[in-house]
Image (cartoon, rainbow, N blue to C red; front, side):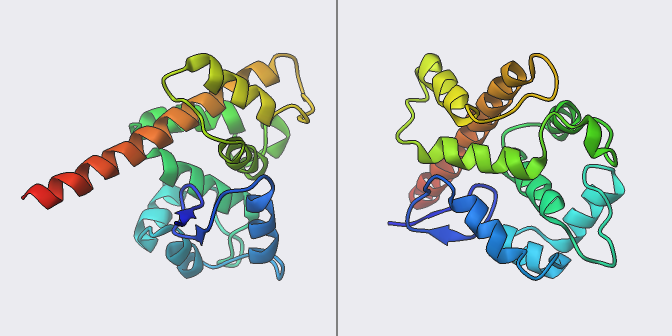
Amino acid sequence: MSTTFPGTTIEVKALEKGSSKLLFDGIFATGGITLSQISVMTGLEPYLIQNWVKRGFVTSPKKRVYSREQFARIIIINMLREALQIDRICGLIRIIGGVLDDPDDDLIGDDELYHKYVDMLASGELDMTDKETVRQAAEDAILDFEERRPDTKKQLVKILQVMLYAHAASELRKSAEDILATLE
């Protein structure tokens, strides 16, 4: 059985700690990636990604090339968009990234956040009905994170919990729709 990296169409046998960082290292070994490559890896239509850039959810690519941070942001939005309204995702992004073009005010880089999220998923079976287990998994995922300002870790734990619940809701919805399709 295989799975995909969250927010992408990229299949792997299983998510492992550090696997998303290795994936990004491979994808960005020669620099940035193009809109068409992002479209293939996420399943998103190019016009939707361009719309997110126009609306200020993602910074503009440089010379039509997207960076690791931009790719991670697109994946995170894609992962959350089935479960959360876009204005709620934008609010979360503002908490994570502050001013769009200013990396110095970021709580955490999108790239690092995505890797911590995948590592949290890779840590084992999470009982979504047990909020304490989910909170502990989020705390474990950020153990090595160095705070840039006070209470950053507390916020990150909450952000990872939101991401996990939203992603799980999206996956459950897809499962329900697949089963429903077999009934029709």
